[in-house]
Image 1 (cartoon, rainbow, N blue to C red):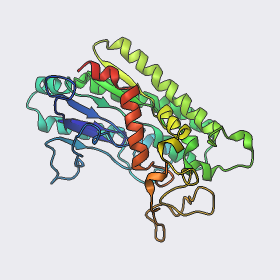
Image 2 (image 1 turned 90 degrees about the vertical axis):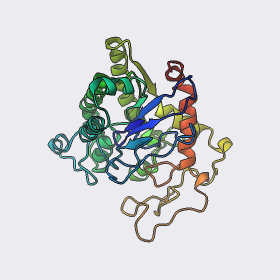
Image 3 (image 1 turned 120 degrees about the vertical axis):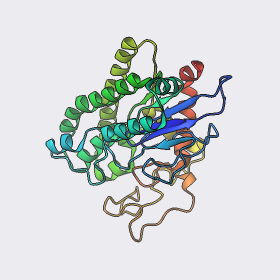
Image 4 (image 1 turned 180 degrees about the vertical axis):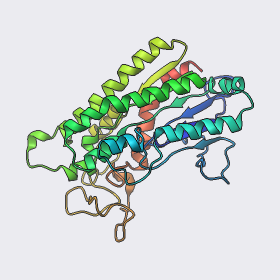
Length: 321
């Protein structure tokens, strides 16, 4: 089985022997890009709360819009999450409940998790999103980072204590390249943008968060030498796609335009009339666009990101199987 735990997701999946003579289990935690199921010829997973779901190959604990910090911690910062109260600790509780109902003993659970790959994240993005969507200052968002990273570190330690030995921890995306922020914080000052027309200060923030994630990974590696922990560079993966977008098949005239959206700006994005709202339609060729709805990427983009990550970041994990 594979369990994917995302800040928004947890799954359990049973793999065929792809890289080793014996079957291996992957446990993954993703938030935005879906796990590279198609790449490994894996089935998609039913959500945990679907009581009629088929959990033979795993279970998906994803919750749209979930945060790393819980509702109380966000409320203390005057941050309102309009989507869900199912933060990372709630999902971890679901995960542990599923383990308890699936395995007959602690030793059996540890044995299975020892043959699993856990992808923890990307986590924390929504915590920052809610603050930025409410137009809080970037200095306040920076102050959240230590607390968010601490929650992520605690979650990683918890899955290690349960028996996990292979963990991938992704960083944040280059959020300054996302249409939701490009439209929200649009400016006439060219100095605010980089060579790919992304907002510099937002990408600098994402890099700061990512540097702190890499710091805890280094410490956790020292504390748990028997555990393989890999950093998944979502930031660089998407930046590489942006840099080579036209050669990868994205339309030069539409790649920065939201596929499913409507808006009186160059990004075709309106926060108050997002994809799914009445009168908002999707484009005819989403594979030509990088962004699906201004916040999430298109399936083509996610697929390319998954291939990049598997090639550049997951080799050490595969070599330990």
